[in-house]
Image (cartoon, rainbow, N blue to C red):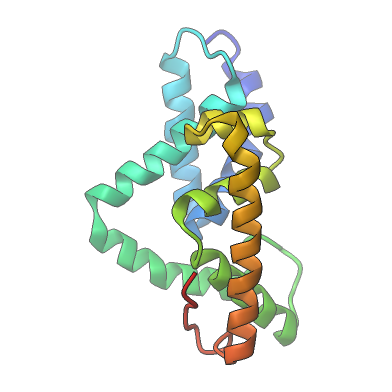
Length: 174
């Protein structure tokens, strides 16, 4: 890779944001992003930089989850802590906003891994082609995946609201 500095400057922040949302832990997200960029340095050519970076980062997260289940349990505790700290939105939150944010994150946790990743990648500005490449989907199925994910997210959120479980941390079935 000839222009690693440019690649880092252009994609580091969006990649860390995506990974923070995906993992719920900014420190871990930065570690995964760093490993992703190290792998990029070793690549001679990368055809679609953003898709490649998000795909590698997503695969690193998946690989790590498969290797160490105990660490995932420990990270759940860190996610709860991050929900209170609201890593994604640095503005101070009032109690109502903090509760809504926590409920939205729990609803996001109710989604399948692929649905959650597709939504977060789209939120980060990836286009359908990039999402398809990163998640190894056909281009035609990205729209369907995103529509289904949005519908399930709304259903999970509404279920949490209805059940009053938003404040208690229960998960809705999706």
